[in-house]
Length: 231
Image (cartoon, rainbow, N blue to C red; front, side, top):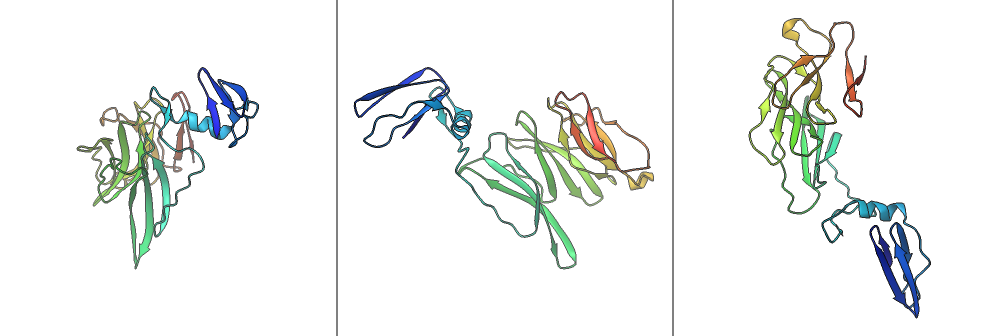
């Protein structure tokens, strides 16, 4: 039996000996033997404590030693977990005859988890930093769109830029902006430029211009003040 604590102290008594475990330490108690001397808590034990919740510090999500495998025909990309770790969402693409098929894999990690519902042509799902909203890309009949929906479900809000080709959304660290890349063939554009928009669809702003190179693979700085991208 492994005993550890991150708050207060725990006194172990076995086989006529006592050991006091203080915060950040652990001790092993073999069956029928005295407790081992305390040592610094292992990384695996720290991860378990890091996933504890509630007044009783009960571990609610397994952090180590549990590996699950999810298989699906085709190529899986953009895997994400919901904010609470209870739902896995990934995009897939595969050939179906002469046609290319793409869509989402939505899988509950924990039995009974609330699984969000997406349109059949959605991909590039991204949860907001606070876990309350979801941004995704939707393939429509006249191009792709960037859409938003509450993580708990409800009606989606899309930018409604028909005829545009939109890339995947990327939340800012504080969740107030979403970054994406776009070009509009109907307006004579041929390369991607970067845009940002509020989750409610307001404040749409072009961050880059020009038709010389694609701008893609954007990343926010930790404080959200800068953006890096590839050309």
